Image (cartoon, rainbow, N blue to C red; front, side, top):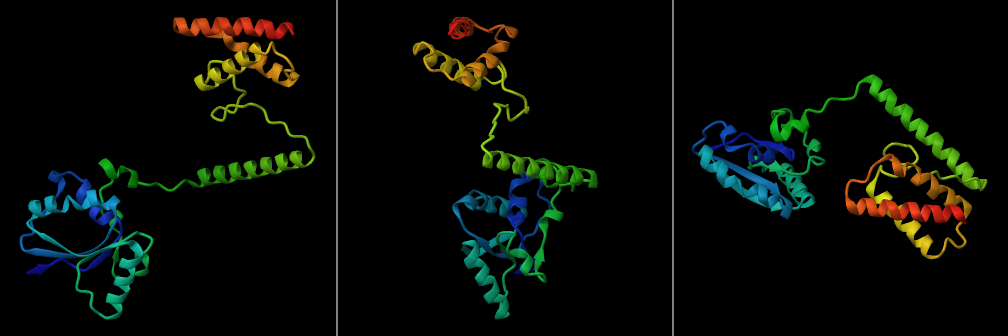
Length: 239
């Protein structure tokens, strides 16, 4: 029987041959036997179930010699190489192990077409300008964090209620969960007749709902909730 060429490949090896559609699998290799030592694990089993499909399409045969966890199969690779008994055709392990085997390793990512499910592999390194912007943003974040630590040390902490997505102060109508939380808070304070509400909290609630009338409620339930918020805001202002 003929054997396939010897190589140790990265995690792309069986992935590339199994995720592409059957119609994209080229070649016919009747009589070819591929002895494989592969990494084991439940996450890989759905991949291995398609080996039979590949065998049927190509006429080749995959003979799984070993299936072990990443560390154990790496030890076996080293033992085979030391004993000069590398009689298998394909070794598959995590990519982090592969570069040690410089004489055997083949980076299949370079061979996989960067289309369909593999389009994410068409990685383009950032331009010098993009790298500069990243470095600048990192420096700005570091300096801002250093300033906040100084404020904490000096008991001058000021944590504005900003929207992490926009960087602006959060307001009614931007984020439904925040709207619901503020409305629930206002309702809970109303049931206590707004007793002992700190001035800062009172100001923040008033500021948050300042845009309440800027957006018309979409349904009856929302209109009823907005009306209740207006009544409670009026009561809050009266205290």
